[in-house]
Image (tube, rainbow, N blue to C red; front, side):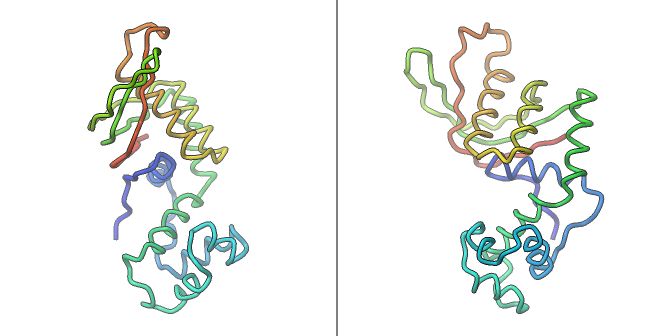
Length: 191
């Protein structure tokens, strides 16, 4: 089964974009994925809490075909493997993009709204956009990802980037309203 590259969170979309730079294939079977992830979490109970499941469900992955392939636990394990796989390769790719002024493209479908300076707000509208993020936002997203920033922090950076890169390219900073990324249907980065 090919790796899905789009996501509905900023952190996962960045992790999935990093998968294009991998030099080795990550574990594919649930048992191998669980073994790999346990190396990083060191404790089954801690991993179960992190994945919002029970230790009994994790133990069931050791038995082939105990849990169906579309079970949410399989998806959670896949996301965790993608987040942890080849961190040095990921950092090298990020550093190369930043050092050579590489491009970071973003394709998404999400609800965007605006908060004006006076406190009023436009209702969010569904938009489907593909655009290139400018230099400071690429670095801010990569730095936040390396520092394991929360999803709210990543969304705030991306919201600001969308406002500057798409809506307010030619307007002075003091006249800009704040763009707010309300809900993400899908999000995919290319770099």
